[in-house]
Amino acid sequence: MTPERTEERTGPGTDGAGFVTAEVPEGVELSAGGAAVWSPSITPPIGVELTEAQALACAFRILARDGFSENIAGHITWATADNSSMLVNPWGLWWEEITASDICRVDLEARVLEGRWDVTPAVHIHTELHRRRPEARVVVHNHPYHATALAAMGMVPEFLHQTSAMFDGELGFVSEYGGEIDSAELGADLAERIGDASVVFLANHGVIITAPTIEEATYKSASLDRQCRLMYDVLVSGRAATTVPPVVRPAMKASLLERGTEVYWAGAVRRIIREHPELLE
Image (cartoon, rainbow, N blue to C red; front, side):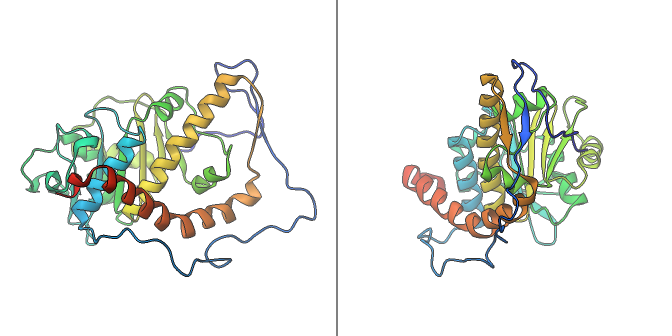
């Protein structure tokens, strides 16, 4: 379900702040974007080989540091290639304290196969998305403050900055809040309402981001939170704002995802390991 968009509108809670789509000057040649235009010959490595559990622990710590998580809430799941099981965080640990040895493995029925902790039945939000969309191997869900505020107002972020182009054609909105999801049936209903959107705002709840890799999922989640903060600040200012022209978004999206994903991940992982080396244990 995708929220309605208009070329110019007024945001709630503002003093007439409107969003107007900018125009590209006539005759300007547009970049095709992406790796086909330019790709680096070498990039700085992480410096250590990570297991999947270690990489997932890094993702939790990175997003927690960026303010994406709400205390004990939220999950990240990482499904196997055959979609038979998935790695997930346990119930009771905050994202900022998770280590590799805390990571659990569950099957599509949310039964714990590996790990020393329990997993909340709310993980059915993830199991049913993986079941419906096996290409979405990583699913991120939490309640980041500014994204949740926009969702409560029935809004998704406008394309206010070039980085927001990575979400071009991927935004969705679920306007009905049905309470806690604690069964496969309720998870399947939410997955049906989400459809094919990969960046979904849930009214009165939070956000869900899906991606084929842990690197892209983490990059998109961190970037989404920043774009929502930007949107929130624009609304609070009450000033009119222009949005990125639709015609340039696909090329910018290609450049961000094809060139930026791996180097974002490597840099974020280097930093979080330097700050919290114990997360690899």
